[in-house]
Amino acid sequence: SHNRKRSEQLYEDALRHIVGGVNSPSRSFKAVGGGAPVFMERGQGAYFWDADGNRYIDYLAAYGPIILGHAHPHVTDAICRAAANGTLFGTPTEHEIIFARMLKEAVPSMDKVRFVNSGTEAVMSTIRVSRAFTGRNKIIKFAGCYHGHSDLVLVAAGSGPSTLGIPDSAGIPVSIAQEVITVPYNDLNALAAALERWGSETAAVMVEPIVGNFGMVMPEPGFLEGLCRLARDHGALVIYDEVICAFRFHYGAAQTYADAGFPDLGAIEPDLTALGKIIGGGLPIGAYGGRREIMERVAPLGPAYQAGTMAGNPASILAGIACLETLSQPGVYEKLDALAARLAAGLAASAGKHGVPLTINRIGGAFSTHFCDHPIRNYDDAQKADGERFAQFFRLMLDRGICLAPSKYEAWFTTIVHTQEDIDETIDAADRAFAAM
Ligand code: PMP
Image (cartoon, rainbow, N blue to C red):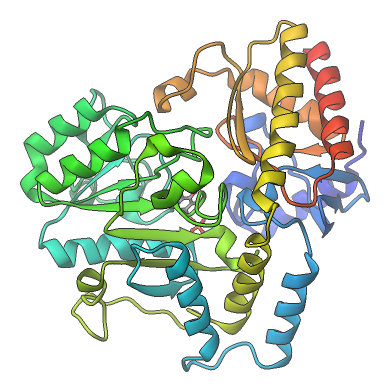
């Protein structure tokens, strides 16, 4: 098992200066029994090395953006070029146009795009625009979907199948939470009931078309189509939060899922789309876009204000272009899929052999591992999975040099630089972990 003394010292130091020692709560080990998180020092390809010099095979992929692996040369070149030429001008640049055009070609429902700095900002902006466009205030979202940390989307469901929200965080006024209705994912009846009651006040229905935030969960056939039909019947917009999923399963977003081999999911064009993560190649970015008449409500053309000092900065844009160029090469998504298929099959076989109940939901190069024997269709199902078993597995894997996200809800991601040997080493580590459980 690894010696992680230096990480432990750094954690003690960090606790003195940084809240909880981390700059995002998901990085703490709170959900897996606490203690020092691993402090990473350097990444290359499918690996990163911690402050004690231990190597890990990385399936965290920084919660999704690092689909090309660490320090991919094409992205690194782009960032170096940007750094050498000045990192911020406070003026438009040509790169922004090139990138906007690339995104629009891949996500045709976006007539117009705006770049921001994070997925949170992208989502927050789609909500403002949807409210400005419809003149309505309420938002409907799905339990367990995460849409960043802005007030409205940090609201959880109360009890009952569809309720006005209660704040999921201190510091959010109840008056704001009351503008949010949360319903279970994959449940069109609950959505219909919510719209029946609040449809005339609802600005938008916000959804992760494929869920990445309580495990990887597919919409059931007809769910997205039904969602869009119901929303439109009530004059509400449809917002797809594709911060995790766009460019993950194929070169594009949910509206072209047929290209990724999911013909059942329909080809619905959302009114607004929020993007982030992969599209920045590992640098901070978000983007949102949609139908012309909706996006033209945004300042300076329209009355919905949205801005950013760092928005569209050359380093993020050039890294994003380099990342998407790499992802557009033939064979990329087949490789991500094949690696994850091999890994998921190995994990399933090994868990079965050792009598460990494990539900694996895999979609292309992303999958989740819930310690339970029921299927995962919604957040309730995911909550019922065994978190203590996950914590034990997580630590056994970490000690064998395999890095996962420290939460039972998060996905594993394969990258284009993982090898079959990495996968087999991971299966072997998991086999020993399952045996020890
Ligand atoms: N939407 C989704 C679906 C996400 O998964 C996330 C982040 N995990 C966000 C929005 C927020 O993105 P960011 O962390 O870049 O603000």
